[in-house]
Length: 297
Picture 1 (cartoon, rainbow, N blue to C red):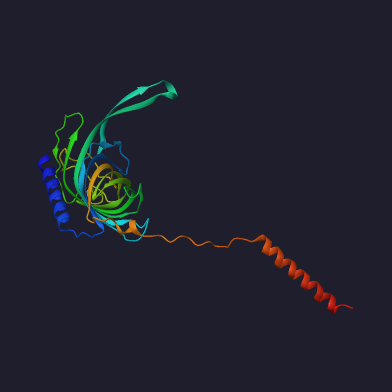
Picture 2: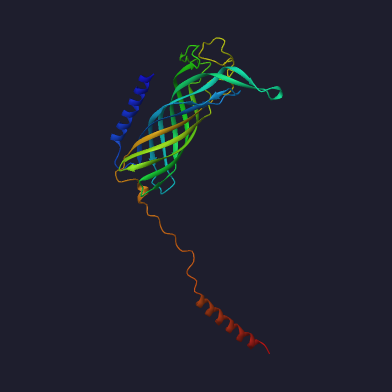
């Protein structure tokens, strides 16, 4: 598994440098390498006893095209990302009762089944942003439509009484493809054409990792890889990730939006001259008095 991760990372790195070398000097875009860690969680229906799975690695490349329009229009782009996802589900438990009478309560101590899924993610990103510190700091938010493909998976039991290992994918039971939404925020420090930063994002899954019980009812023909006696009706996976970023801006001069001169707002009203207005008002009143006197008898 570790060798596969190294191969994926090496491929993404070579692709990034190839694109850097082929870029035009005036291009309004960047290419960024990302890497970090995070946590994952599954939302089962009917509900199961679950908890966050921490230590989920992520790395990839991100391309952004920056608009030439001034301020807040932001960038659009696409990412190619390797992401570890998964969940921890309490498959069995022991009970402990505390209290007496009506106040007697059951406390359950769960043993957890863990499943980790290796996924390639393809987010289509919109990134509004703004600059600070004389264009040396970019602060941004991101929103993305995400498509995914599950490469492989592994599983284990917390008590080690059942064997773990590679998860066997079955077409009637498992979904390879997925989709969802993601949102996040971060910043980048600009040093010439190099950008170093940090970002955090949350992937909200809409598709299910397991096909529902209308298609795959029970695990009667499965091994230890499937702890669900009946397949859940819903099983989307969410992921929270934190990443360090190192990017390269193709444009040596800087983005065109830095050099847009914004016109000053014109004054809506001229200065009010009180003395002049009083004089005009007095002349009008004087003229109006003579006219009335001439018509009266």
